[in-house]
Length: 74
Image 1 (cartoon, rainbow, N blue to C red):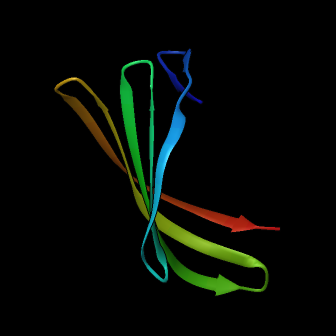
Image 2 (tube, rainbow, N blue to C red):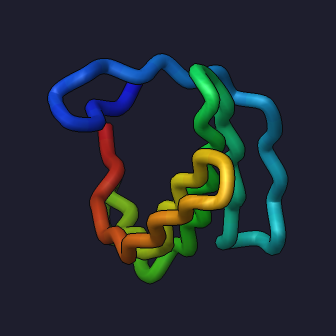
């Protein structure tokens, strides 16, 4: 789920592809939107992985691209 103009948009995962050992691409679709999330693992510390990537959101001919960073851990 993502929010656009404070309206929830529900997306379903349609594909997952490992582009390399440390790079992942996920695609989602729903309610006329398609989102592609590409993540690259930058470094790994004790139980935490640091990622960067891009998020591309499309609807018809409109396209929004944003750089993202984040941490995953347990």
